[in-house]
Image (cartoon, rainbow, N blue to C red; front, side, top):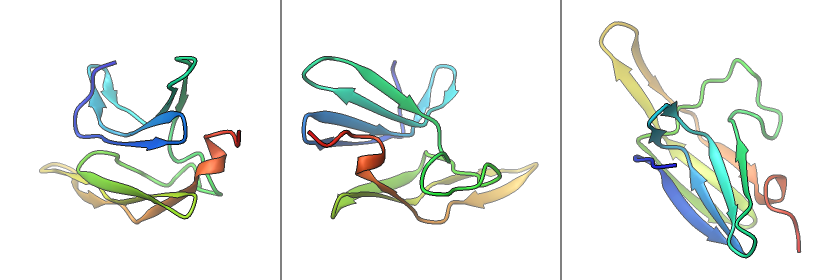
Length: 101
């Protein structure tokens, strides 16, 4: 589905799309297998012990892959009615969402 404000990475045979905003609202983490075309969709926070109350806004962020981890820095938003939210850094082990081949 179309999106803007996301980041993308190639990890082994997978395209990893991190966040962004689509036609129906904010998106989480999508993993596309570039061989089979299978798409797995994850909502954040759902990794590595994150609490359901943790708010992660995946737009206006940057991300990178280092040592088998996906690190997401920044992101958040500004609402004149509700205030400003800036994410804490999030680290997700890639084995959580990409199978070891």
